[in-house]
Image (cartoon, rainbow, N blue to C red; front, side):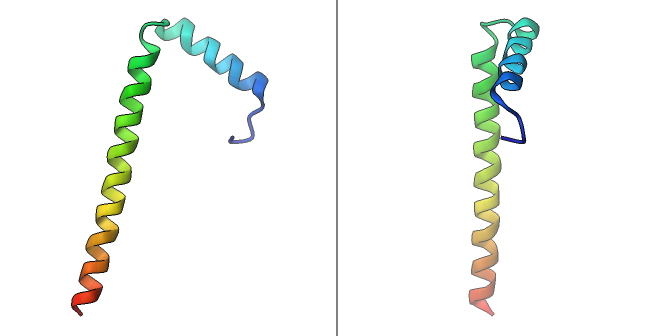
Length: 57
């Protein structure tokens, strides 16, 4: 995972909890998930549009 080992991941998680607090972490994860899902849907719809344009030609 980006060249990070488990110790680095644990340190990043601890820093995130200290900065945002334990109650805010699930909200941030949810927002990140929605953002990534929307981004993926746009990429897929863009590929579908390109495929449809090629089929018409």
